[in-house]
Length: 275
Image (tube, rainbow, N blue to C red; front, side, top):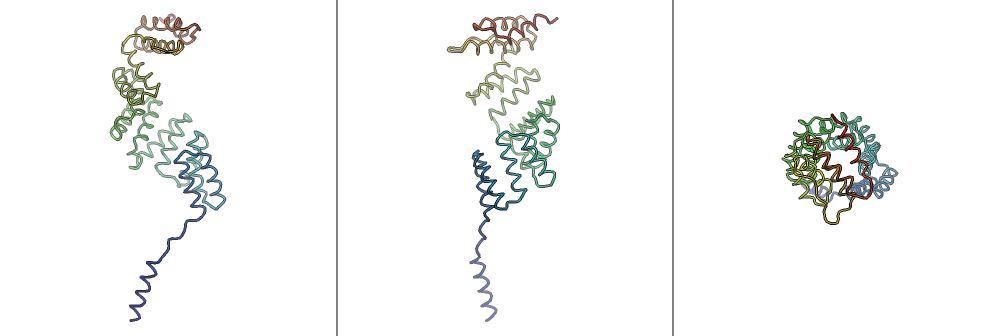
């Protein structure tokens, strides 16, 4: 009888157990995480200061301060936090991927490649098309186009037609002189994101390199904007080996506006002085 009573008492105690309330530091860190996710960076900074004052651990604070610096584009500070945490064994694969992004922004390409390869070795990052896309950008900056192709193809296999990915992949083709492939990707990217002038510019550059003719002035287009497009068309034609077309584009760029367009003049001078 006593054993039964004790058993019932234990069951009752377990059922009535209360989960300990989070500490003030934990609560503030959770609020900081939400602020970071919502890109409310000043609020996140204040909450992190409060959490540190409430006794948050150094690792918990530094991880989030790294993410805050990352969100603000303070790449040097972010990289310092991430490298320190990873060196102490307090990081993970997603942090390694963020370290790769910061290293890329700082122009430290070998380090960026090493960090991202480390991150991509883990499934949680390998399945993220954005990480694969960044690996492609790193490879392009290093001139490793075979590795870039693998990365962009992997990203496409995960996410399909993402305009940023298509644009980056198309730009990689541009760097390789693969005009038709670059143009096809650029057409899709620009159609999916008509608010991104860069995507349309890359599409058009590939088209001009393919020999689609010089651009015509669009209704309402400012003279300097038209001159810039003509200059780009001339550069594309020159790269593709069509000197006469390039010369025509640069010349038209010079007369497209009432002001002297220095870049086109410089390109025309270089073209005329080349053997």
